[in-house]
Image 1 (cartoon, rainbow, N blue to C red):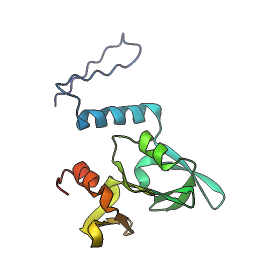
Image 2: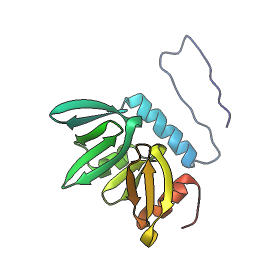
Image 3: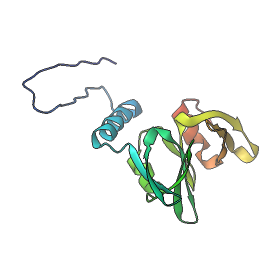
Length: 151
């Protein structure tokens, strides 16, 4: 990858141009990162014990839906958020967040280790030492995202 940067005091607004042979997952991830940075959507609003918190996107371990409520888990606690899982998937498309079950989305950056488990599931140990299961239906997506291939 070649990166060129031109500084010009006559330019009123920053313009980013990507030239590529083919749009692939790496290019889509770069675009998504730029859009997320530009739109300042890095904060997630969560509520815990009656108080409202601004949670940094990078601090999230995982999201989970329980009884039609969505929760965001960090090393510091659990927060109820207003987003639905499908909205989180759309908002953080082409980032390190992936669906791991019908009710959970995980931040791949926060997984410490993975271990095969009974029935084709994978047990993920998070940076917080919390253990969460990756459903067998989502294992191929996880392996592809991690670049470890196969089923």
